[in-house]
Image 1 (cartoon, rainbow, N blue to C red):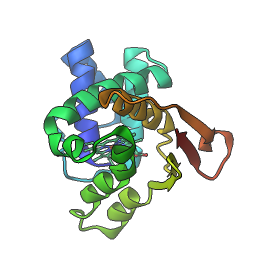
Image 2 (image 1 turned 90 degrees about the vertical axis):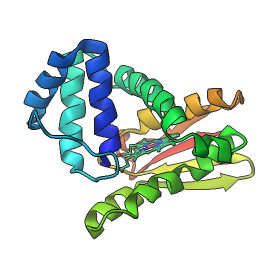
Image 3 (image 1 turned 90 degrees about the horizontal axis):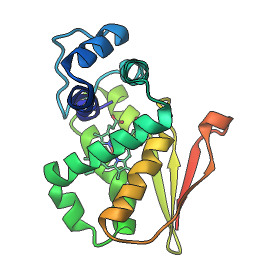
Length: 181
Ligand code: HEM
């Protein structure tokens, strides 16, 4: 997982629950207290999953609640940090169709082919007569985060669209399929 995500997760934890909560998440997730997450560097996905699970315990949050909170925090940060991506798309549909390319841009800077593939292989998107169909496959199982972010992108552009999951890895499907219409 590219460090942008872990950095922003710790920013969210510390701004909402204080620095000690951040230290406790690091202790439980077995992450050194002085480890810095660089926003363009890829780190082990398993470490990310320990951080996310520890955040749920320390902040006493359910998965969906945490995904909603992180989606709000992440999108607000992205609007300021990466304004060009929002300017380049004239509506939510265009933004969501470009989202895998935005992600894969982070893969190109990784020298390790395994880390590069781990980023590249997570999302595929299809444009089906106005409907956006997303194929998402990741051991991180963050389809709830995807849907929370997609809904916020729709609000960002003032569009009207419904986000639905047609099938989910958590129910044994080989991938999550999300439809936005
Ligand atoms: C400017 C906007 C965005 C930027 C810069 C960005 C960047 C990133 C980066 C760097 C990662 C880590 C990738 C990895 O290591 O695999 C990530 C993960 C993720 N992003 Fe985005 N993202 C953006 C917008 C979005 C949007 C709009 C959505 C959904 C509609 C989204 C959904 C996700 C999900 C679900 C993950 C977790 C993937 C996984 O590990 O399974 N992102 N994002």
